Structures are given as structure tokens and as C-alpha cells.
Amino acid sequence: MPTPPPSRSSATPTGATASSTPAGTATSGCHNLTATSTVKAAVTAAYQRSFPRFTHIRPVPQQFFYGRCGGVRYAATRFEPTPGATNEQLVGMQDEGSATKYFRGTPTGVWSYLATDGFPRAPHGCGDVPQIPESLAAAWGNCSVG
Image (cartoon, rainbow, N blue to C red; front, side, top):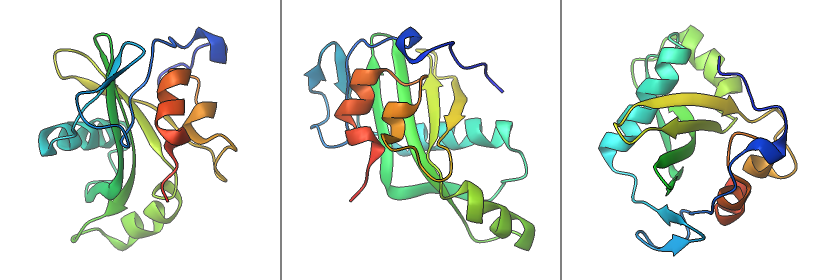
């Protein structure tokens, strides 16, 4: 698993994007991007590399946050089981699926898993995840859906 930065202030607060901001708009050096099916598949594959027992999953619809700060892309999503999931996977997803997962992507398209929300969720959602730039978390509404 990736090692988290030593403190919240070590995250790079370079700006933000949010799913509620129109695609292509900039906020403090960051851009909101439209998450294509290719991006969602790459993020799902990154999670499956870290947790290979979850072979039948997909991002939960309307709960995918995606943006870019400089050359770094970020994504946050929850996952749900898909048809074909085993009973063991379904049980495992009861816990794992309820928490938001965070990812970082490089300009070459390589995604890596960064962190998972605690359970219960932290009071400030992704605002409490040190690997996500503070302004990005704020623009994403702390990854709240509702």
C-alpha cells in the first residue's frame, strides 16, 4: 500500500475540480474532467491490482469524482459488485463498497490506489484524506453525494 504523506499540509494544494463544476472549467490551476469509460476502467483496474479478490466490481453511478491539478489526475469513487460476483465478494463489498476510494493518475495513464475513507466516514470526507489536495477536496464538496 502507498505510504501516506506525514501530514495534511504535505498534500499539494494546487487547486480543485469537482463533479459539480462543468467539464473543462478551471479552478485555481485545476480542471474538472469528464470521466470517460476508459478512465473509469483504468481506475477500477488500479483498485483490483491492490485488492485482487474483487474481480466483479464497477464504480457506483453518479459517485465518480475526477479532475486534474497540473499534470496529476485524481479520482474518487465507491464500488459496487457486478453480476458474477461470488458470495465471498458480495460479503466483502458490504464493507469495502461503503467507503470512497482515492486514486492518482499520471500523464501516461497509469493509475494507482491511494487511500480509502475510514468507516464510518470522516467528518470532512475527502477533505480528511491527506493524499487529496485540499482545494480539490473542497471543490468536490468533500466527496459528498446527495
